[in-house]
Each structure stands twice: as C-alpha cells, then as structure tokens.
Length: 177
Image (cartoon, rainbow, N blue to C red; front, top):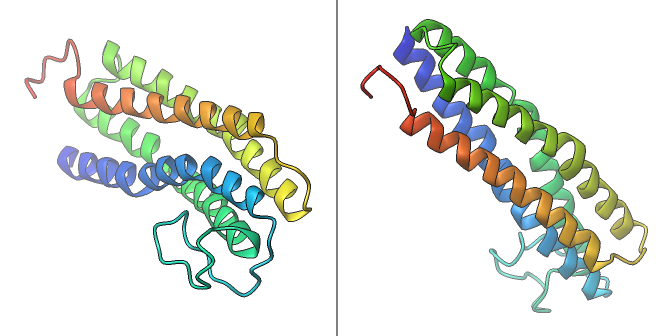
C-alpha cells in the first residue's frame, strides 16, 4: 500500500505542481509581451509565449492573441493549483503508512509546502489576476508589477524545488532509501 500511495503522491506532484510552476514562470513575460504589443490581432490563436508559431505572422504575442495566452496561463495556474491539493494529502497518507510523520525532514517539507501554497494563493494568483484585468481593460501594465510577480513565482518555485530535494534526500531518514 505504501508504494501505491507514494506512486500516487509523486504522480500528483508531477502532474499538478509541474504545470503550475511552468505556467506561472511563463506568465510575467507573456504579460509584458501582450502589454507592449498594443495592436489588435483579434482572431489569432495564442502563441503560448512564443513556443508555437505565430498564426498571423506578425511576429509577436500581442493584442488579443497575447491576452488569450495570458488568460490561458492564469487558468492553468488556477486549475492545477486546485488539483495540487492532492499532493500534500497523498503525501501525508504516505508518511502515515511509512510511519515517518514525526521525522524532521518531513516536518520541514510540510512547512515548506504550506509556505509554497501560501505564496501561490496570497501573492501569485491574485497578482496574475490583477495583471490580466489590466490587460483586458487596456490599462497600462507596469514593469514593476510583472517583476514582483516574477519574484513571487520564483519564491514559489524555489520552495517546491527544496521540498522535492527533501523528499529525495530525506536527511536523517532511517529507511535507507
């Protein structure tokens, strides 16, 4: 049962937290590109921050296409953040099955996971929404706003990277793995 729970925990982390970290990291530059464009390319598909070909040949991700990209990235962050609740739930179930709930590495991981969730909910998602609103209302987007969002996103990603390392290294663990 422990291996099954651990497998679900790892899969949930990859499939839920992974998309949030990538989409959140792509969000600030996508906002900057959309804000700089100022042209209306209505009807063009989002170019996913330059990863897919630009369908209208304009060479940018601006206008309606840029806003669509930003909207898609925000939606990915929101939806997968909700799905990410499965990661700590399955992690706690796994830790209980392994009998390691009191281990220091796990307590630190739980603390950092809580901090990462707090950063996401309190700083990243609201600022994404604020910037998306500014774009859709054709209001100016300040570089400082996207820089702050990038900083909070970096903190979120660093917290998750640290948790991942702790899950692998498990300092002080006596399980031998």
